[in-house]
Each structure stands twice: as structure tokens, then as C-alpha cells.
Image 1 (spheres, one colour):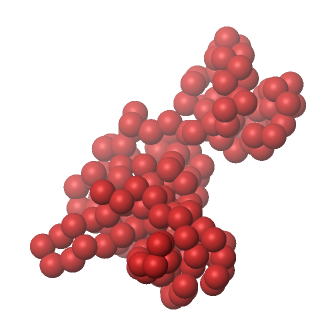
Image 2 (cartoon, one colour; image 1 turned 60 degrees about the vertical axis):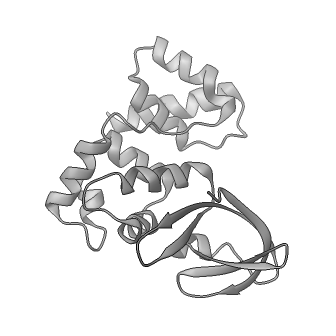
Length: 184
């Protein structure tokens, strides 16, 4: 299994890149949002997932491990293949995806082309409880403080995932409390 690729970007197209690793060019499908951050001749690291089908072997690339994990979760939902999973990830970033699952926001998925009401409900039903918002490493104490204050862990993680990881713990706590207060 190919987990990551690091090398120079040789080509960019509308939905894929070719990355040169030790003289071998790998074509990797990426989301348009990720494509905007890549430039020809620039060094890049792509977190990848290789999907093997009867008639095709494809590499799908992601900006980080969390996005790749979300791709895997989407592919585990009945009726969602790699292409539709990439379409979902094109329509929402990792934080929005996690928040939509945590909030059981069916409309967030229905706004994605190719996702109807039944598929949106199936995504929420299948992934409910399987995903938690990823928080910055510096926010673990803030998470504990929010939980002690009676905040639900899913809500706390969702809010902390939206914050800048470079803030001090006290700044994170203040912003998190403000966001939680605005949500009520």
C-alpha cells in the first residue's frame, strides 16, 4: 500500500497531479481545493490511498492524514465509491465534514452534487459516532477544561477544531467559550 508520496509536482490537471518520486511519475487524483495549493516544480507531500478495482488501480491524494481517514470512512458507506467520496471532500473541508457528522446536518451533504436525501441519511447513520473532530495537540488541556465545565465532548472537539492551534491555552479557552455561547 502506498501511504505517502513526496516529490516534485510534474503536471497539474483538473482533478489530478503527477508527482515525481525517485524518477517515477505517479498520477494521483486530488480534490480541486487541494489542487489550488500545489504548483508545478514545487516539492509536495501527498497522503495517499490506493484503490484497486477489477479494471483500475488508482491513487487518491490528500493534504493530511485526517482527510485521508475521512475518505476511507466515506468509502465504507454503502453506495459511495472513491469518486463520490472525493466529490464530498471537494465540497467541504475536514472541519466542516466532522461538524456535519457531529451535528447530524443532512443538508450539508445534500448540497454536494450526487448526494440525495437517502445517501445523506445513510452517511449520517453509518458515520455517526465514528468520527470526532481533530483538535490541535495544544488543545488537549482546553478540551479537558471544556468537558469539566459541562460541554459535550463532540461539541467541544468541533469548536476546538475550528481554532488556530498557535493560540495560547487561555486564548483557545476564551474563543471556544465564545463560539459555544454563540451556538446556543
